[in-house]
Structures are given as structure tokens and as C-alpha cells.
Image 1 (cartoon, rainbow, N blue to C red):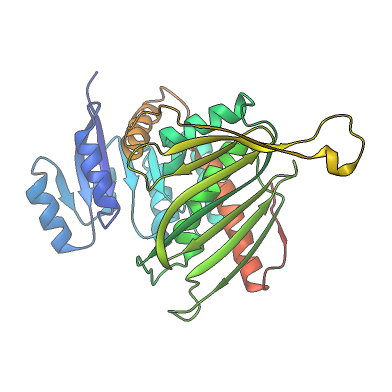
Image 2: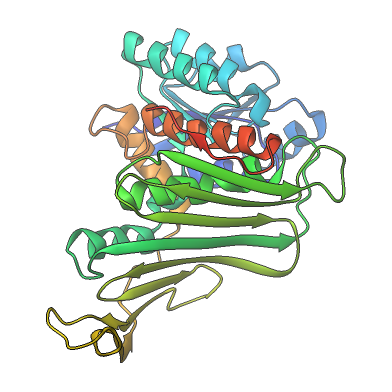
Length: 336
């Protein structure tokens, strides 16, 4: 089978990683690259002389079999529509779109045209997240009570989107993937300290019909660099620390046991302190796994783990959270 001809639109700080990774895939060929910057195009042309370099997305779409859209978020929906119209399968980086209306429109066009479209929810391809989902599905953690994550850093200040839309798609997509459900209510509070109207810090809480709560702290104004997720269950608790070079997942055999029969309330709750174990998880690069999966999706060999419908679900949460931010943390219902 010949290698799939893949193009990348947008080669900025994250898009260039797509370029590098596509070029290294055994089943794909970096056929074309598009960027608005002349300096970036010159760099790409020197690094990848076999690839066509252009500043015109339509020209690129005419010479590839699949495309990665890694441009600024404001352009995602329009470029996705162009790819669908050209019949070119697309991976659309996060956020999938900047409004529910645009996200739904892209998803509907993709379904009508029969063109595969993936949402760039990178962390659902992370081996640790996949292992954690397996543990939860097997009931190893017991009943999941709540989960919380931190995605904070000092720097990466964005002038075009706030911390919610810049960082939030990662943690929202992971929560929805692990719990296999969408929230019914969302609350969010935040503040703009560095730039007027652009929140540097956001605290987001999602409530699910099952009773599970998911809380997310997002900030680019923090002394720590944290990429951590904690899942608390009735049997065990799990911590995914993506800042660890190795041993990213730890399972804690800790909890509070409540016997079925007891004489008093005080006797009913017993703290359990058990062992900590570290599962063996492959150290594969999530971006390579995501793009390898995209190649199979583009060839219609499998369905997308993070398809257009998943992109829509995450944008619904982000839009509801934005409404909650504007209303000082008022709970906002999430449409299904």
C-alpha cells in the first residue's frame, strides 16, 4: 500500500510538531505544508525539500489525501469546511471550533459528505489515559466519585484566546472520554490579570448526571508547571502526572470503607491505607499515536476515537463555561 499523502496547514509553535511527526510516520508522506508566514515557509522548505510549500490552503487541499489543520483557532471551522468540500479527511486541532454552531455545522457537513473529520484531542491518545480508562471500565477503582485536574504554567500567554479555550479542551476531552458521558451542568469562574477581557486563570467544574464531579484548574499565571489528573473512586484512587518523565501513573489502594452493618455512625467509616503501585505503560509519543490513528481514519480503516461529534461535545462544554464566566459562576446547562 502506498503511503498516504498528508498536508499540514499552520506550522506555528504546535503545528511544526505535526509537520515533524507526519514526516516520520511509516504509512504517510509529508506531501505539502501551508503557512501564512514567509519565514516559516522558508524554514519548512529547507527542512523538508520534498514537500510542496505554499501560502494557499486551497492549493494544498488539491494535492493531498488528508490534512492536519493547526492554524489559529478562529480559522479552524472555515478550513475544516474547505477540506470537507474538497473531499479531504481532516484532523482539526483543538479547539474544534469557537462556537457550538460552527462545530455542529462542520460535523453535519462531514457526515453528509462522508468525509472523516477528527478533533485534535491529543490526550485521549495518551497511553496513560487509555490505561486509566481501561482500569475504570474494569471497575478497578470502584465507583468513581470525582476527578480533578491541573493544567497550569508560567507563560504561554495567548492574546487571541483565554486559558479556558487554550488549555481547557485537553482536560474536558479527557474527562468526557474517561467517564463516557457529557456533563449536564457547568460552572466557571476566572479573572483577567494580564490582559483585559482575556482570563489568565479559570476554575471549571462539570457536573454529570451520574453524580460525578470533574474540576479543572487552568492558568498560565502560576509559579508551578503542572499537568496532573486525579481520579477518586470508592476502591482505589489514581494519579496521572504528565510532568513525570517515567512512572506517570500511580494507583493508590486508599479509601474509606463503610460496612453494610454497624452500631453507630462513627463505627461505619473506616480509613483504608493500602499499597501504591505503578502500572507499566508504554512510553509512546501521544502525537505519533494520534496521527497514526488519523492515517487509518483517513483510509476508512477505522472510526475516529475523537471524531467530529466529540469535538462538538467539548465545544458545548467550553461555550457553556464561557457563559458561566460572564455570569460570575452561574451554573449553565449543557445541551446534548
